[in-house]
Amino acid sequence: AQSVTQLGSHVSVSEGALVLLRCNYSSSVPPYLFWYVQYPNQGLQLLLKYTSAATLVKGINGFEAEFKKSETSFHLTKPSAHMSDAAEYFCAVSDRGSSNTGKLIFGQGTTLQVKP
Amino acid sequence: DAGITQSPRHKVTETGTPVTLRCHQTENHRYMYWYRQDPGHGLRLIHYSYGVKDTDKGEVSDGYSVSRSKTEDFLLTLESATSSQTSVYFCAISEGPGINEQFFGPGTRLTVL
Image (cartoon, rainbow over all chains, first blue to last red):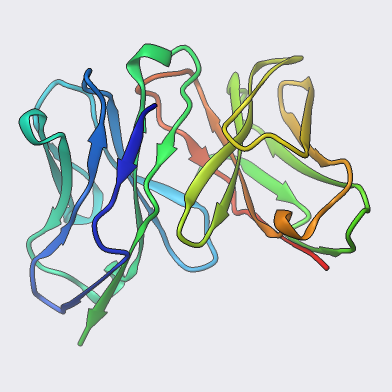
């Protein structure tokens, strides 16, 4: 079965530092890949998605992610953290084999703390 | 923002009582999903719908049922609530499967005492 692993349930960075949130998936066929962000007491908002058009995907708020098939990874990065980036981040996959349903499998989430 | 509302936003109930959560959309999207969010588990799919009266189970469907009689409404029912169903419930909508983005509602916080 498809699965997603996010390494690190909590990540803390200083304002202005690089943000790196890790996501690995398990699938013999590269799935559709997504990063969502959840601010406190809100629903989830899409940051970016991998469509297979390009391995480096740019999203909103300065975030980007790189798809690496050889490493089955889709890590999220941002060059310079801002206080407003503090939130919970979720990596999710949608199996191309079951793409007629659009079901998402989520990682367990990573809470990003940004210190002044 | 996508037009998705969930009601109620907060509910406290007792074990053994039935509970119905409502998701309402104004986007005319075909696909609708119910997830639950629990610490350490991310979001897990309960049920989904791919059209009016067309529904299917997700990975954690035991103890839940759903109904969709209109495009805009997707109801989640806990027939007899248990403490293990204390969670935050999110509804999501999508134009279609695969690469299409899912838009999420604001969530319903349910506490079962």
